[in-house]
Length: 120
Image 1: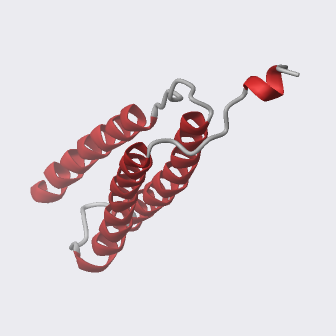
Image 2: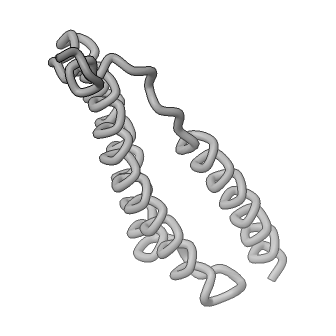
């Protein structure tokens, strides 16, 4: 009568935790929108670099990264909500570290582009 199915809890968590999870999701989503907008802005507003293909490539990288962050944010929100419903530990995430590394690499790439473009 009290088997594994009965022990598994599937109750609504405290609404404050649900709202905090939603705010975190919205913060990730704003980050995704900013990356997508940055990709469009680079293609439309930034002058050409020394390498003609650099601007569209940068726009594509920013836009794809924004889309990936949006999808990963949805998945993260779902996983956290499910863990809270079952009263389990929250699942780990690598999203902040991955995004930080990606933006660090992108910054280095941009610095090189700017330096090379300013020489010519």
